[in-house]
Length: 544
Image (cartoon, rainbow, N blue to C red; front, side):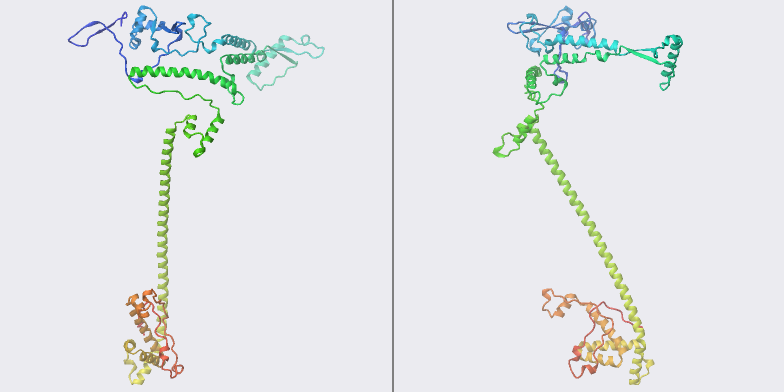
């Protein structure tokens, strides 16, 4: 870019043209590159028609921008429109299109200079004199601070009574002494000085606090704020709804007018962007203006919205809009929150159920372990008791050996047999077999002969009785329980679930009645108790 002309060399090998080019502005359709230009008011001139109200805006190119364009700064030239470059070349102002300029201004009165009526009247214009007065007062405070903020301290020898220190001491020596003490004090703030003559001191100036005109500056600032149409409490804080209701209404009216101007600017930007980008016109607006501290009104609306049915005077969406909330979004958020809360409750219930199930399983496992341990202990106790009974039975059998031998000798003597040729274990087994066969076909005879053997050979009877009892228990263990029940109840009550209960009996034979007590009663044998009750089978004792 030289002398306001664009020059280039064609890159095509068929062309090879090198020289001046025709420059064109290429508009972009990228949203990210769109921007709003704030024109500097110091370089804007407005031509105003007071009859029609038309505005014509002229922009003077700043000197630094003109210099950059004239010397060919490509960083500036590449992003500058050709209209601006041509205005710099011709040293003229750039006329802005009225449709592309939005002028947000306050209404201008008609009493000002006609050529200046195109400009709006800023709020501080009515208080410019007070602003200047405030600057003067602040300048005065500045001079007072410079001249009176630090006092001048004067030291002198203090006289006592009618004695003048000037007549009694050498003032030169006194001054040297005082200067030495001051130097020592500055090097050591805790130094204690001792002087022979009282020392006097006077302060000169240092009265800046008394001379400051800060209250006057504050009063002038309040005048400026009030002259701009704003109450001082809005700027300084501390305004309350009850104490400044009327003042707040005045400010509200001012803000409403300013808000209307902001709406106009939004509509202007929306129109220009939609037209240039070719997109539909969007509905954009600012939120309704309201007093932020009007809490009573909001509370009243919330209370009215809480009423149900036909008594409701205000809907909840209206209250949400008053609180600057979107009802549709809030309902959506509530639904999502409820959904998440339900999921959390379900997860919590599942966790509790899982914990309870795990606890139940653990309790069941421990209960099963306890039952197993209990069964083991019962079995161990039963085994110990059985071992103890076996030992006792064995001891009883050993003690009964002599009685059995006496009974065998008695039988051998009655039969004329040598006792040495008789095998006692075989004899006991033989007697057991015979009594078992006898009991199977003639119970009364079985009982009678057992009584006779008990009276004749009690020791031998005891051993045979034990074998018969063990054989009886083994036989019962081989019969199913239901058959035992049917056999005991003769099939009458077995269907009703009445099953006989069996308990373990004694290991020793019960003593039957003597023949003398039986007398001639033929039914005495039936009244004798039978074998002991069912119990776990025991092994035969063959130690005899």
